[in-house]
Length: 348
Image 1: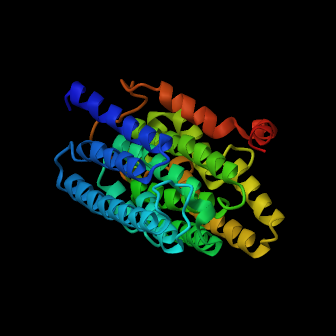
Image 2 (image 1 turned 30 degrees about the vertical axis):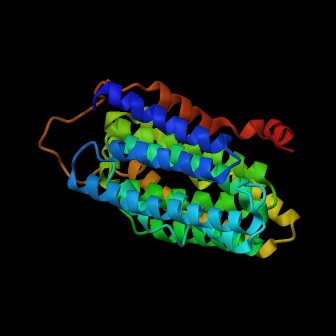
């Protein structure tokens, strides 16, 4: 892709998200989401592969549907209340429609069906943008409108997403689909605690972005898209393989890694709110996700690949890719648990 075109598209992505962050008017927020969608579509279709074009079309249709729903709901709200301000969501129908549309935008279950299919058709870097940056603008709107939404709806969305994200990833062999289901499960954790402690939602979103970035950049470095490609990775880059296993365990939420922190604090908050059954279901759903992360760890670090290759063995080949983003995101994904008290001080 032409570097000038790429620069315009990436700056439009940034502009769309910033516009949504800064807006308190529904029309402006809608405009930001539309700029965001239109800026990522050429990035998704840049390889002209049939799978990429199919994924782009699916993504465009779902995002356009969600944007139309947001427009309709905000118009309904303006009709009832007489103003377009986000903080005045007194119409329950409008607020329910908006949260449903935003759930479709970020891929919360049961509106998640597009997410694994779309991610599977993209290359790893575009998939990384879709899984991290594209979640920010809808989440800003969800956090602003969550107080006007029925708490049962948020709880149902959160629990469904963690269960679907756990179950869906169990039978997958494609790494991008596994990361898509992982994303759905993490979104569920963020939504479940939103009505009680929005700062924990932001904390979970931040840690999720760093852990997912580390996972995607690792796969990009080793050019792996299937589980059996991972079993060859240890001969190419043993150090990277070791840290990747830890990043995957961090995504699963095991101590003493960063991923344990948001899960621990969210479960603690749910227990404080006298919701022991919700907390138990969430903890059990996390075990489902942990199973497929462990499967990846097992394939990467505990098996020797059974298939022999006739090509030259890529043993410790030098890579021309930049390793700084990977090193930075891996460090953050592994080592932030000791600073939990400081983060708690900032968020409370």
